[in-house]
Amino acid sequence: MTDHELHMTRALELARLQQGRTASNPSVGCVILDRHGDKISEAATGDGGRPHAEQLALSKVSEDAARGGIAYVTLEPCRQRSSGEPSCSERLKDAGIAQVFVASLDPHPLGAGGNDRLRDAGIEVEVGLLRDQSDDFYTDFFAAAASEQS
Image (cartoon, rainbow, N blue to C red; front, side, top):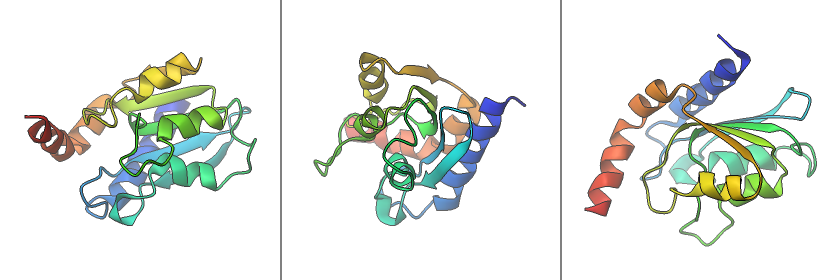
């Protein structure tokens, strides 16, 4: 197993720990490494669906600690928040993250497009790391998102 797979496996473990505790929001896991490749933070979506995993993980580190680092996220960082707060893609960009590994794409209208926002900011985004495991985990969320759009 590669280091990238190990970090995404940990992100999936974190998401599983919160499964069933995030209301209608998906349970997401996030692991953050600094620019040297050392793990500096991790989190899962909070009880009731907020705060989001990326927001929680970034809140645990000093302002510049994540600059040039890597984030591993089980679901595409949101493009927009229904609460009006900064989205997870904005937070990752503002923290100076250089690379984001995403397991699964987010089909929800507020989530979809987060990867594009990151790429537009010059952040390298890799999609599909452990996608099969992640897609399996999000089966119910994907079904709910599809029914909202129909």
